[in-house]
Image 1 (tube, rainbow, N blue to C red):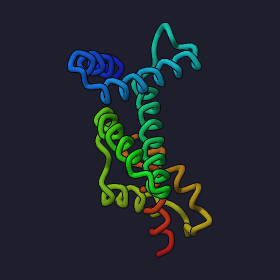
Image 2 (cartoon, rainbow, N blue to C red):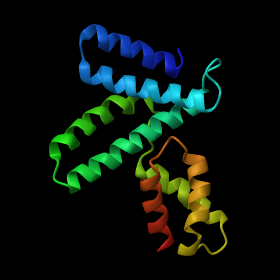
Image 3 (cartoon, helix red, strand yellow):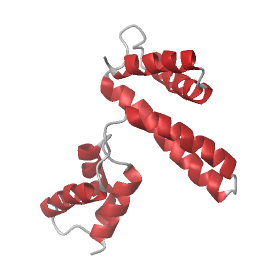
Length: 151
């Protein structure tokens, strides 16, 4: 069962169980996937797994940004709602790497670079994210790259 079929199946299960929060969250993800299919003219054939993962990762990033903004604005009620949605969406992403595993990948990239400096942050981030795409949050990778470049 591919990822889109899994989401659709989980959506049906949530509807039957009367779980409104899970149902609404999965509908948003399903809708986002369909919108990307339309944008890319792939409505008939559907998206590849990698493209679906990108849609889900984008939804996760949106929720994380919303949580930060709501907490900064003192709206803990809205932040909690976003956290619940985030917990529903996260299982559809591949397992995220630990900071130690990310540090190992970044160290390998830095070892192959000639005298990397903080000015090379963008170039190194590009290489790191190419290897870690979907496996690590970009903000975490950026912090690790930055800390290792400052050493």
